[in-house]
Length: 157
Image (cartoon, rainbow, N blue to C red; front, side, top):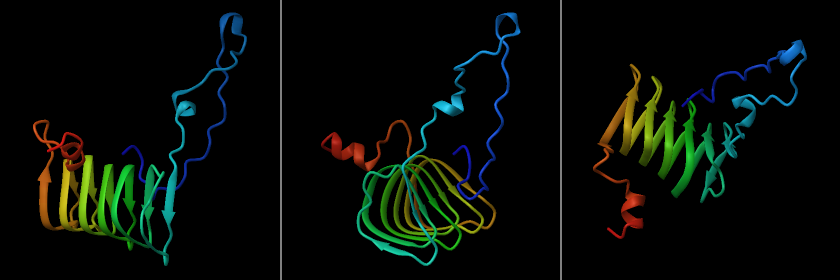
């Protein structure tokens, strides 16, 4: 994850003049940051409780409580300090500073912050646990030789 969702937003930087031939400013210069599209984000705020299915979101930020049977298709899951996720979720990357109780599959990376607790089953390719982070349950590392459960279902296994 490039940047924690809990970090304060970065102020926009003023455009810098880029000189082209003859010291004339170039127009229509697009930086890689401009090309990045913001992810469709669902934020469940503090004191809010949600039960059910999440669809069409690319990023889920849990500051309150979320209970779900299965959420698939997310790129990022962020559980803030004090946030609780109960159920099953499959994402590309997950950052846990609150509590997740259930089954988490992070196809790429799982970061458990110092205040984070993972209860149940966690599957991931890369794991980072800060000092104080807690894991109670089972950790399964995803390797090139193994597939995620969704890939197993797609392949008919």
